Image (cartoon, rainbow, N blue to C red; front, side, top):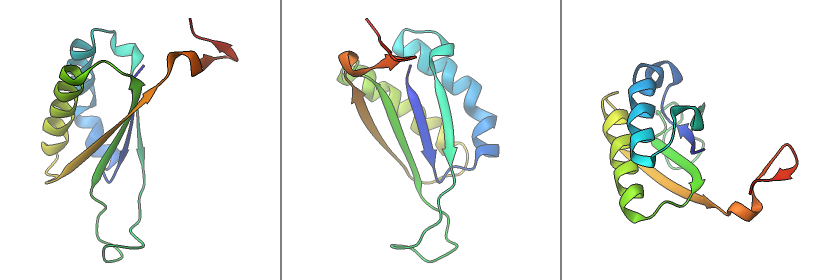
Length: 110
């Protein structure tokens, strides 16, 4: 169920590495590839950079916490694949969901 939200990474370029990335992340997380979602958000700089400059790569990962070792390997894999797209810097943040606060179709996940 990890959800990856990419900013500053063009969708058409990310698609070229999405499948092998998810396959590696599934091994790291010990889950199926069908548990992952990836979305790209268009970002336009309005402060902190010149207008028209590309946004830097920022990846938000929403997931159930899996520990430091898994988090480190996950971040390394995402960085490695995004870097293959000639993106020089990748920043990643993890948001841990609480299992007792996660609902599917209005029902708590047990």
